[in-house]
Amino acid sequence: MIRSLRRLRSNLTSSVAAASLLSALSTSVVAIEPTDPSLADITNFRQYSATFASSGQPTKEQFSAIAQNGFERIVYIAFTNNPNALPDADQVVKELGMEYMHIPVTWNNPLPADFYAFADSLRRDTDKKTLLHCQVNARATAFSFLYRVIYEGVDIAEAKADMNSVWQPNETWRDFIFAVLAENGISPECDECDWTPSQM
Image (cartoon, rainbow, N blue to C red; front, side, top):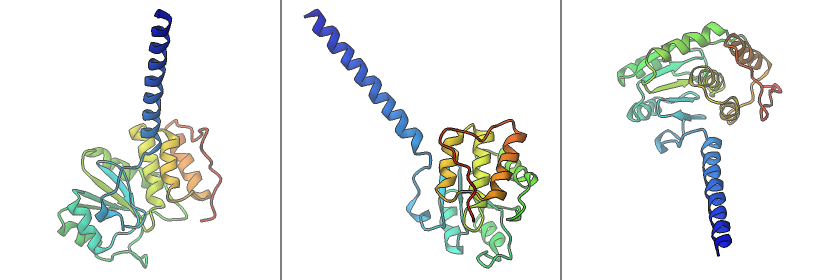
């Protein structure tokens, strides 16, 4: 009888431990937060936390939905002469009561200074709900990856999986990412990480 009780207790302990492990794994695998339906149509919209998201270019109407969802700051890191850019985005955003910041990042030559200009603006007020966007969320996911890893301590594999849900960086952007990580004493390597450049 005592042996049976001990065996039962051991089995229950193992079951509880297994359930806890599965729960931990399920929360760590899905890093991206659920998206509000009104934001789901924005090109490659990704919500990383309650205060930080990235996307491609929103339309004028989508900026209204962004404001209604509590975003307070918009950071644009592509060029205003892009055919898909909203030429009066700064005015649209300001009229909706949000802050607007523009850091033009050259596609073929992203610079660490560009990233740090963005990062410094976020770090001045980390509680301000921020959307970082470019045209298709390639530049923006790369900056998001770096910010989350360097300043928020997000695991490399988790942050890279989120970036890869939009794209696999090409050689220029991979080398840029590696350079910024190196400046901050962080290795890009992880068991799940494939950094083979894309042809984008």
